[in-house]
Length: 214
Image 1 (cartoon, one colour):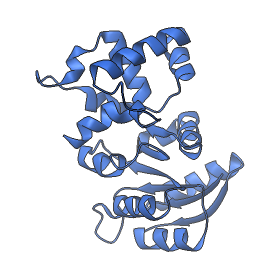
Image 2 (cartoon, helix red, strand yellow; image 1 turned 90 degrees about the vertical axis):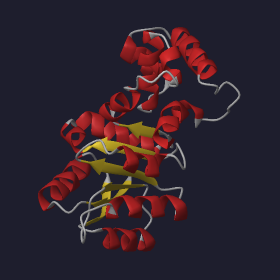
Image 3 (cartoon, one colour; image 1 turned 30 degrees about the horizontal axis):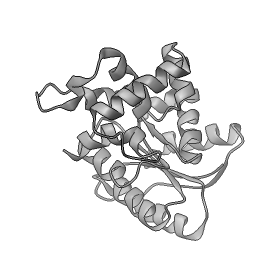
Image 4 (spheres, one colour; image 1 turned 60 degrees about the horizontal axis):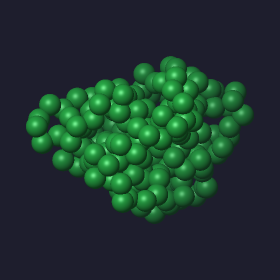
């Protein structure tokens, strides 16, 4: 795939460039701030953009705002944002507009090379890749109004894997259950969360996005 990187840490940026090149991907540009990222995306045609959330000059949410802008202007481009911590509001801004071609990963995930590359491939293929730790923290809710309390422990486990962006087959392999069991649990989840009439891929992550919006 063709990738544009935006990361202000020179060490991490160069490490990502080397990693992607070794895996046979083409790095079209590697920049250190959000303005340069937008300029490169405007001039080139990447398949996926990987950007840090906090970028110069103010080191707040410049990378995130650039990612949201890219999704608005070039929805065919996959966007993966990297964050040092789970930042719920930032995740909401990125994910609630669409559940396709988007990823939200903690920087620690980059060190787990196979998982990082798998996340990029999922986003490139049109899916989603949400860091497991992000999903876990979003699912820790205890209020009585929380419809997740209606799910069984197995259904919650399936939902967690689902929200990370895994396919049904991958969920079955991850949890060591049959494909039919995965489908049965998914149908129960959609029913309990009021998503049974929603069509398309997006409902596969709406259960988590609903909490990001609340």
